[in-house]
Length: 167
Image 1 (cartoon, rainbow, N blue to C red):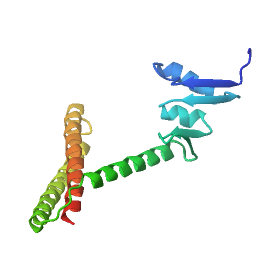
Image 2 (image 1 turned 90 degrees about the vertical axis):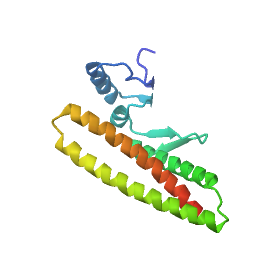
Image 3 (image 1 turned 60 degrees about the horizontal axis):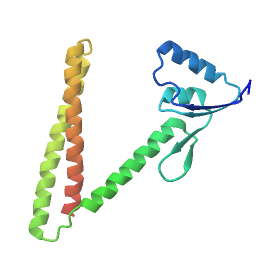
Image 4 (image 1 turned 135 degrees about the vertical axis):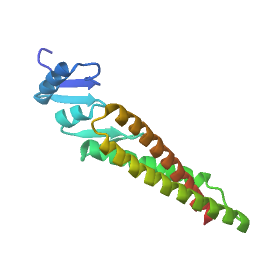
């Protein structure tokens, strides 16, 4: 018990100041024994862990040889697959020629809206680059950009549903 060789750590970096965090990382990085670390601190995991595993909610543990990057990629794939499944399930079936025309018209409207939002996004990125030294302007432009991106995502979802309905 005087010299343990296994550490079980659950969110060890929560509520630590920078100096303490760096000292903990240095200590854990040189730890000669085995560690089981549960953490949302990506940097800590990448620095002190040799093997990364994840729980994706499938009832098992998945070995992530690619580390955190693989976790993010697989999580995004699962979220996209779930969203696609929901979109297909929620897509109304169009049986009437008039409904198909209406769906194509809606699709065209959404495409124009997407073009407008894409142009606005480009303009905001240019304005952000120009305002690099003005923090207040950066904050307002960033808020505006986030709103545009959120609206763009929503319109893209609507477009996907309209595209399914038009077919």
